[in-house]
Every structure is written in C-alpha cells, then in structure tokens.
Image (tube, rainbow over all chains, first blue to last red):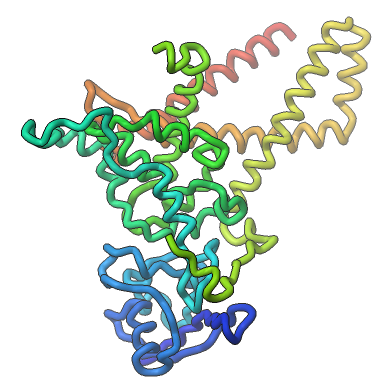
Length: 247
Length: 144
C-alpha cells in the first residue's frame, strides 16, 4: 500500500475565480481514513483556505456530501483506501450552485422540504392529558425506512431530472412526505397531495432510480415516489368520479 | 431564510450535453423516454391497419405491400425493440409501486428467495403479459 494519495479537489473562490478548477493535494493514505479525513488534513496542514462542510463524521448529520470521482457520497463514509492508488477527485455535489470550493447552496432544498409539511398534521390535536398517540410496531414499520433520511441531498445530486428541471420537488422531499403520509398518527395526506400530485411533484419523476443507489441510509426515495404515483393516480380518478367536496 | 446571493456570486453548475452517457442507468432512462415516440408510432400504425382492414381487401393488400417495404420493416423492428424495453422496464417498476399485504401485515421486502413478494408481483405482471400475448397470437395466427 502506498503511503500517500493525491486528492484532486475542486476550488472555487468567487472573489478571484470565474469557475471551479481542480487543485492537487498529496495526503497520507491510511487504512482508516475517509475522504473527509483527507480534506481535514489539507485544511489543517496544507491549505487553510479550503472550504467544506462537515460535522459528525459518522453518517448522521448529512453535511459532508460531495461528489467523489463523480459519484455523490458522504465523505465521512467513503474510504480513501477504496480509491488507492488514486487520484481521487473531490467536487461539490452536482446540481447545486457552488458558494465556495466544496460548499453548495441548499436553500432550494430547504424550501422544498417545507412545502411537503414534514411533520405530523392532525385535524384536531388531542388534549395533552389524553396522553401520547399510540402506534403498533407494524404501523411503525410502514414508514420507518423513510424516516431515516438525513437530508444529505445526495439523491438530488444523483437525479438527472433535478439537474435538468430544478422545479422538481425531488427525491428526499417526496420520501419525507411519504414518511408522514404512511404514519398512522398523521392526518395530512390530503394537504400534501396538492403539492405531490403535480407536474413538479411525483409526475416529474420518470424513474431513473439513481436516488436510491446514492442514498447512504437505505431510504429508497425512488420506491417512495413510485408508490405515491399509484396513490396520486387513484386519488385523481376518485376526485373525477366522486369529488372531495361531496365525500 | 437569508440568501447568500448578495454576498458573493454563486457558480451555477451546468449539466453537460452528454450527461446521459455518464451512467448506464442514465442511458437506459433516456432510451425509455425515447421509447414513447415509438409507442406513439405503433398506435398510428395499428390505426392505419384497422382503417385498411375496414376499407376492403384491395386497400388491405396495399397496406400489406407498403408494410413490406424495407424502411417500414426496419422502422417496425426498431419500434418493437423500443416497445420491449418500454414494457420490460414498466413491469419491473410494478413491484416498486405495489406493496403486497398478506393478512394485513406487510411482507418484509428484504427476504431472499423465490417467494419474495416484489418478485411475485413482477412475475404476475410478466405472466399476464405472456398470456395476453399468447391469446393475441392465437387469434391472429389461428384466424390467418
């Protein structure tokens, strides 16, 4: 095993550069080092001007998503050793505007997330003294997979539809909408239908499936979207035959 | 929510013209999108055939002669390949959209083996397709 590996890191400094370019850094190659460790080595030892986001280093916070050799990855869970002898190309997540170096602008995703109301919606809240909303393990199983999303946006980076049509609500937002729609305690499915069953919602997806491949938490957004298409189609047929107001 | 737009210019990443060549899944996706054009062509072709049948045997023979031209044959062969791609990917998608419940309990999707519901859902669709195709073949070939 060689002692070092070269990281080709995308640099973009908006005050001096018009577009990103790759800069080579040689970092130690250690078996237990993730790409993020390599970046931190650069920041601490070689070039303090490099900017990137990170926090937990254990695949929970979802902030260190970057493009590694062209694939969207959590850099804390992607090991340098797997790319030996290198070089390893580290770029910002595709499909997002770049703020600086490896930092991308995420407002679009944050706004989309809010649109699907990813929280429990009730027609009427139960009084506190009646206790919590109970749920069986089977009911929990119905949505648990979708609740594992850490908002890392790797799925948006992997989705060519989002790249071509930025209005697309996107994989994570739809999977999170499903996380609440399938929750037995939630009563907001109809409110979310108006956002999800639109041209920018599930119908923009033509099932590439790369979002599910990219997801580091096994959420399967592609599956969530296909499942919702069936519901959306059923609801619009029902609306046509038996309008919601008359029900 | 505050925006960083006014602080520094954001660099908008452009999607390359050849993005679809980067991954097999992207290529398959673009081909599947393209297949809808051929689905439309087959619909038009079938309507032309129905019209020819309705118009009498002379017109039908004319339609058959036209269909036997090399470029029409080639077009229909390419259309057949795209239709197969369209159908196979469509039926493979079915288990993603349909969640099978047995006695009200969802079947664990990660179990391996032949009795895994996603495979059963796909197999049921493919079988139904096969039966329908066999029926059509029987009618067409049987009557012919």
